[in-house]
Image (cartoon, helix red, strand yellow):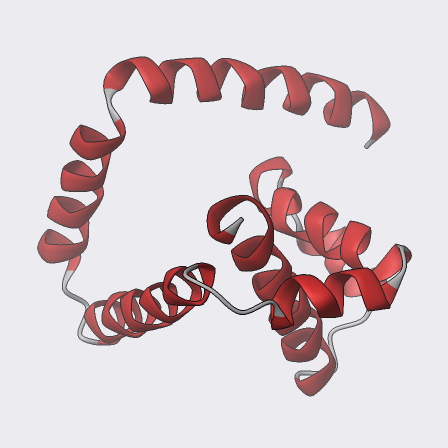
Length: 125
């Protein structure tokens, strides 16, 4: 549940909060998103277009899935720190390590899915 539901929901809610805090409007989003950056926006829209209680319960559910969210927050902080330090080599190495962990087979299959989504979304833009 942590990877499939809790983490994406938490990210979507935090993203919407961040947009509001920075006074970024729907029009701003539409004019600044690439197809790739649109993916988290689509997830955010899904969470905020359906029953909020369902998503609140997903986020509040106890158990091991909370560790996934906390680990993500810790890792996000690390990545932000590297980016703030302009540590391009470290960031590049990190992406490379992640790629090895995820496996070439997994990434190739997900890229094919992403390209199919891009093709559909590209027709709508």
